[in-house]
Length: 146
Ligand code: SF4
Figure: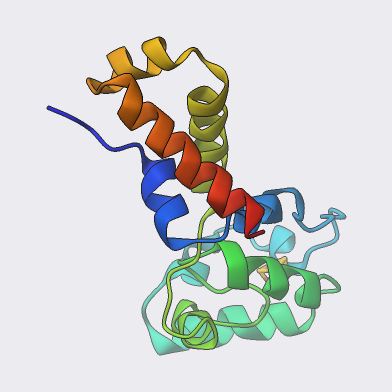
């Protein structure tokens, strides 16, 4: 059965500049306040008291602003930069973040589809080469928009 590549689905809805955000990881210093916590499970808890405790730790952290900016784009779970997952979801306009592992996979798939011979891609996805050309056009258009 034909499988539509994730990068093609992504390119049909998004500006591909979002993938460039992958390189903008915070410059972690090793002085993050949460590194002093032995068990970080409560940062990923659903309980309000745990969330409040995690947020208090973030308030003491020298990386809070950079951590929050990063997590707004790339983290769907847990307290990061003093914000809960729900707060970040709302700030994003009720949208999921694109997590860094997803971005890495999308970049890899984009390079594969754009750089390998069309026949190889057609065989891998069980489509004809015209479909590969159409996918490449969609990816190019989404790149131009960025
Ligand atoms: S702001 Fe980020 S790095 Fe700092 S304590 Fe909170 S989660 Fe950890």
